[in-house]
Amino acid sequence: MDTAVKLKKNWWGGGQSPYNISYGKLMMWFFLLSDTFTFSALLISYGSTRFSVPYWPDANYVFNKFFFVKGNLPLLSVSLMTFILIMSSVTMVLAVHAGHQKRQKEVAKWLSLTIVGGLMFLGCQAFEWTDLITEKGITVNHNMLGPLVHGHATAGPAAFGAFFFLITGFHGCHVLSGVIINIIILINVLKGTYEKRGHYEMVEKVGLYWHFVDLVWVYVFTCFYLL
Amino acid sequence: MEMQHAQVLEPQPTGMKDPVVRSLIRVFWILLCVTIIEVSFAFLHYFTDFPPRMLLNAIFIGLTVVKAFFIVAEFMHLKHELKNLVFSILVPLLFITWAITAFLSDGSSWNQMRKNTPEIEHTTPWRTVTHEHR
Figure 1 (cartoon, each protein chain N blue to C red):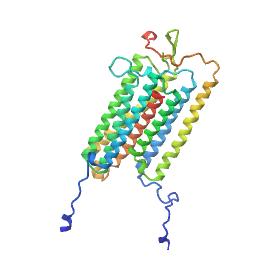
Figure 2 (cartoon, chains in turn blue, red; figure 1 turned 45 degrees about the vertical axis):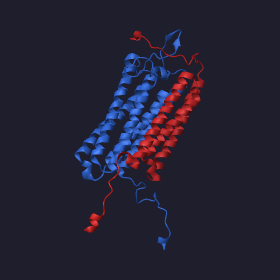
Figure 3 (cartoon, one colour; figure 1 turned 90 degrees about the vertical axis):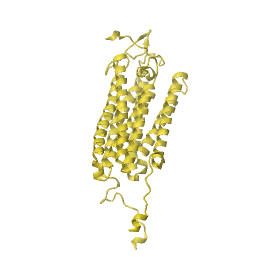
Figure 4 (cartoon, rainbow over the protein chains, first blue to last red; figure 1 turned 60 degrees about the vertical axis):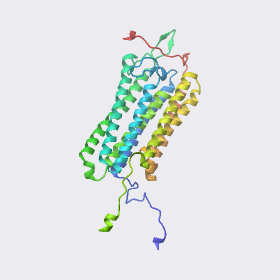
């Protein structure tokens, strides 16, 4: 008479997977978790160093260039970068949704737009780096963003350049690899590999990676430019 | 054979008629508004020094967590997955939140421990330097 009683499923008792998603998707989640630890370690080290020194350059004055417009426009270019990346996340999730509906052309359309968004973000990031390196003379271990002493700028904390270039560079590498992976998956979509396979789960997996990249940027944006 | 032709398949709704697409676009608008609110607070503080720095940072961190929640739950679909997966992801993140708190307060305490902190006006803006250092 066990059938009369509804047994609670023993997920962790062994014999079956406690998750009802495929191996590939689960491994992507675990990889993203490990990457979260890496980025957290970088941002935590940035945070604790920054709070431990008496002076840190003000982001409103360092990041004040907006492409080729003259003048003081704090935070505008980085807000645009955040918007571009969020938009590319939206196009990515629409590609995943189209994959669920098995609409090949629509998947290709949204995936292409995601790739374009990623490339635009990389272009903006390259512009930021160029401005900081050539106009403001910030390097990995030297910058002149220190406090004014008798009207002269002094050397700022050496860690500023190191942290900025390392963390945004590491994130930029993730965006670049995401764009390359998206291009490969796009080629496969256009070739019909996933139609033959019967499911678009690969698009879902790279979608997870892309959203992770967006999420990390949200945190980097907050830590470097807002806090 | 008649039964095969009697059933007409409803075409799948696309674009904004699809309820899933509508909810995703709704999440996009939420993310955009939260980002605009964050940047507006930053500008408000830049021009008027209100709200005070501590409160401003708390607002930023809170709003960023809100954004993170929407990206992970809706875009990455975690809200609709099995509870096992949700907890496998969330529990380590809670530990990381603790690590962030612990290390930031550690950093602040190092600052307090410094004996020779020079008198620096933190509001002193840095100005553009000519390329004399090259």
